[in-house]
Image (tube, rainbow, N blue to C red; front, side, top):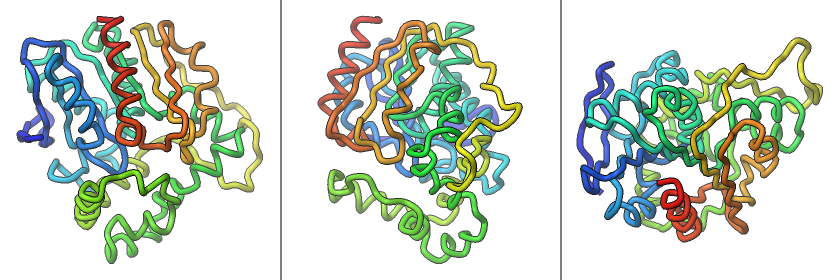
Amino acid sequence: MDQQRVTLANGIELDVVDTGPRNAPALIFLHGFPESHRTWRHQIAHLSDRYRCIAPDQRGYRGSSKPQEVAAYTPDKLIGDIFLLADALGVGSFTIIGHDWGGAIAWGIALGGQTNGRVTRAVIANAPHPALFQKLLYTNETQRRSSQYMRGFRDPANDALVREHGLAGILLQEVKWDRPSQMESAERDALLADWQDREAAFGMLNWYRASPVDVPPLDAPYALPNGWTEPPLPRLAIPTLVIWAMDDLALPPENLAGLDAAIDDLTVVEVRDCGHFVPWEAPEAVNAALDEFLTRTG
């Protein structure tokens, strides 16, 4: 998939795949940590004859701009990048599709873009809803235990490890990889090479360091803190497809509970016997879910 360099109005430069008919409905695909636009390689190949498929390497990743200050990665800036990318490419309205961190940003893009008609549909793959995830971290032992790696990613005591070994060093220390044998060897080799870029490594980690999500230690009480309330988010009114791999070790299926109370037009597709990286671990299931949803809501 060929990429082009796109300069946003805020000065950030993104390497972007932009393929498919220019007059077709636009789909913007957002990858998660610690991958790239190639997270969506199977879906773009499947859909680009009918849709304009746009997939950036997001801020902090690979050849895209990699500011080193943590403050450059707050969610508002990451969300803003995608609206500015649509502007730069002449895209008025689009369907947002995201996985993992890309899904977290896609939730924000959908919630903000539904009001002015720029975002017409949302597809989220294994990324928790922002109104539900924080509550799980406070109250659910499974989710809190699964998220302890985030504390390691945020700890500056690990910076020397990253400087010496790249991103792979901290991944080996903090993460139990989810079904690693599922990735093709060529894709794995390319990722390992990407992870050697020290600026990109800290850019990727800064997504976690700038996030307002609170991950308590395992010995903290399993209860909502005094005075805590859910963020005052609007209901999501646009058609929304949530694809969830049910064997995800980082984000267990408990994240599906309560979605129907936050989304008016919700479709949930559960993918069995699949780990976290559902777009390339179960591409046929994801493509089928996308076909049905995009056709029905088109």
